[in-house]
Image 1 (cartoon, rainbow, N blue to C red):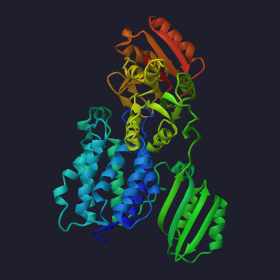
Image 2 (image 1 turned 135 degrees about the vertical axis):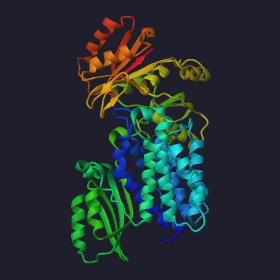
Image 3 (image 1 turned 90 degrees about the horizontal axis):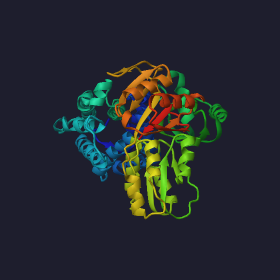
Image 4 (image 1 turned 45 degrees about the vertical axis):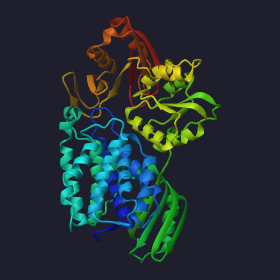
Length: 522
């Protein structure tokens, strides 16, 4: 391996990194702090990097390749982890944009500019996260990457120091220490660097080797719709008719060509992994592009909207609460894990004096912020709602007949609503208020578990009892999840009337997937 890396080599390093993310995606997702299913860090980082690789065209000039890779990652960024990852690579591009080939020292400088760019881009940088690890990982060993050091040795130093820094994250972020986990975003970034390093060692990662063996075929096939792949043929002892027949069986349509010992395939298929396995037996993968299907629920709902003073964009999960938002004047709905591009597409379709975004999730706020910066539009306001109940109360404060300034001031006001959730646990957990087993229901607020029980209603009752401010509340707005029993509404009303008779209760069928109950207390 040459000590200077060009765009072609770097692309192969990044594809190996993406494969490494595929292999460890579930492991990274499971590194969530809470025992409920809220961990999607690995998925968000994989989707972000995947969009970058799908966007970028091969180029021997490293700076030109990085420009397209960085742009694709910025537009495809999802969640806080994806936004930070895209900014890390944006910083690398800014450092290397004029370089055709790069030596270890130039990579070192790019990693430094990368973490500094990410710090600047984040609204409220938090130590003990991916930001800390990327900073310490390079700053602690930057003086060792100089002179005649090889690319392999430089990446090994960097990777080892990143892992050391990862082990320190619980000491810097108490919530990690309480849950006995490491930072998942930092682990995702390390997985990327590990994949790059493995390529330098000649270790090509097979992304079919996913953690969940039962779902490894489904993992690729469920996400891939359009496949482009090029193979440098090592084995010429095969019949093209047999290959064509196999691909025809697995594709709805395809185009297969062989020229100068390079096999190129473009196919629409629901069996991408089987095709890839068959072709890999013939030689080395030169390039691979697997575009994701767009799930029906992820499609952007942007109707024709007449000019309005304010147009709302809301991120929503659940048909019931979506109907409520519609009645309250929301026109545009995005999925609950939107990309930067999703927001930009929405902005282009809207004509209004102001666009107001209700992210309704703390992990979407950074994505929305990145989209606003890229759009360069000055008429967009983000109300940093962390859940759909906060969004509901923001909308309730709007007075459409008043001036835009007064309306924005009203919906930006913190009315003091606090949100409790009840969901099933996917892993064990314990604190001073609850001992949680897998399958138990848990009541939680922000970053604290309040109660657990095998029975949903009993779990809610315990959680309300452990909620210190319950005596100061006068109303409860409750959303029932998609999977709860039909008679739960009556039981919840009975619970409040018997124990909290001063609280006025409103219950709606929210239809949300993740939370069995969402309770807004005001």
